[in-house]
Amino acid sequence: MHFEFSSRRRKLLRSGMAAAAASWLASPALAQLSSATDSTPIRLRFFAPSGYLSDPARIETGIQRLRTAGFTLDNTQALYRRHQRFAGTDAERIADLQDVATGRAPTPKILLGARGGYGAMRLLPHVDWPSLGSRMREAGTLLLGYSDICAVQLALQAQGRTGSFAGPLLYSEFGSPNPSLFTLQEFIRTVSSSQLRVEVAAPMERHIRLQGTWWGGNLSVLSSLAGSPWLPNVPGGILFLEDVGEQPYRIERMLQTLYLAGVFRQQQAIVFGTFRLSNERDLYDENYDLDTVIHTLRRLTGLPVLTGFPSGHIRDKVTMPLGYPAELQSGAQGYSVRFSGYPGLTASTLNLASLLEAAGDMRTAPASDAPTFDETSN
Image: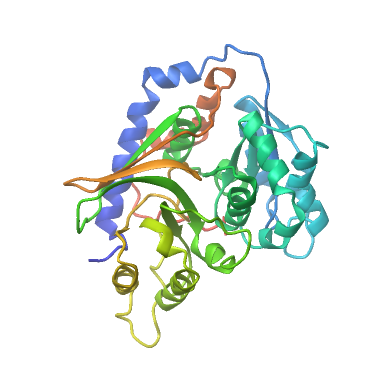
């Protein structure tokens, strides 16, 4: 079985997403989100720990959309910084989070990552994660991001005892000139509710039902933190993994690193998101593909390895909690994951429905045959 989408499957997926989104746009739930009844401002603070943001127009677009949605924005200057390949000097990028940890900056309701790339790892020893986690728990703060932001999320879970969300970034999602309606809808669905259920149609080799902490993120980042105090210790966990632009043997090498470090020994299951392998081939053996890697991982660990979870470096993705309880159950058509116990937003204080206006042309647009990959976030 192959996990790369064919043109036909991609069309079906996108048309299904568009139909579901159109139905949701007309639902009473959305109408409730459109009417703000509380004047209490919700503070959103940007942090930019990784690559710099090269397009000022995308920055301004993202800022305007979030302001229209009702957020009070903080630390916008971080979005315009540049030092070498990074979004500012190490000291500036550390301060994005450390100022919250020390109380120099108010604890926001949302900490939103600017973009991915590389650089967050350099900051980990310099942030007071226990203090940051404590302040976030008290305020019910939602930290959002993916890609290189995963380093921050793992450190926050490992040392701050606080979860986060794999979700949209300022640059690649909120600032996109052509944002995904599905992604924005799923962001709203997750942050405005106390529970989330994600259904995945994927082949299943055996029936499973288990509960545990859902955690993980970008495989490259996880494997680079193996053996460090910033990789969480999660007994009985459900480990989620995704990546982009890696050849199959490199994916296996990173998985072997986690195996040798004893990470898999504590897990109940491993769940794969997307791995973007359409142009990646093993030069020694073209048949050595992701299926081969997954087969090896199952044999090596003896764990259920599930595939197809809609998260990663793709255009259409869910927003999902990390570091919070989850229940995973398989069925005849695939599997479902139910998340709970995570903080959310009081939707009545915002105009979240306004975020969907930028993607409103997808309500009537035909399903595209173009790849759904996000080319700008990493």
